[in-house]
Length: 187
Image (tube, rainbow, N blue to C red; front, top):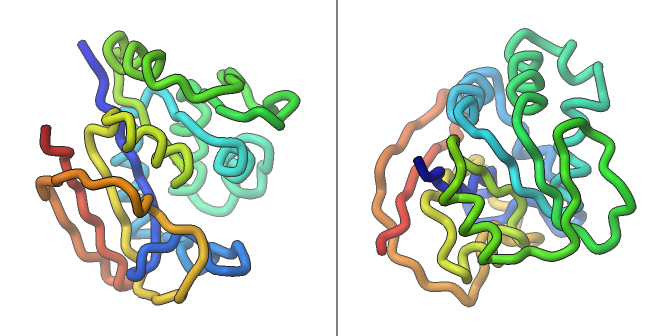
């Protein structure tokens, strides 16, 4: 069985995962979206992260206050902790979470082999790392959550120099205004 490589991002309607100040608090999912995300990521066996995304997500293991916030946040923390993590970084000295391996370079061939041998799906987080995977033709699906805000600039969710045809597989509107779009990469 081969796993799919899935890029998931929460971004502004104008396509940014963080604004010009590096803030992304405006993208925080409400309970309805968070519960949906829990079900979406439950089958993920491995997360691939760059350093910055890893440091953000590591709080789900290192900050007990996050999981104590609510039942659905506790559930997400458990799902996240159960998965393997691979962090691609040249500057990170060591990881701070269990089930985590540090790699210095993103090797598209190695990621392709990981997909082929995976028994569960893989998720890639962070726009810079996802851009490498998109350029290498490794992304099978993109799950985009559009937050109802325009931020006008910052870090883009998708690279400018990639052209890929997509097929819409699913969509969902949430009461708070967020929209979920699930695309498959056309081959």
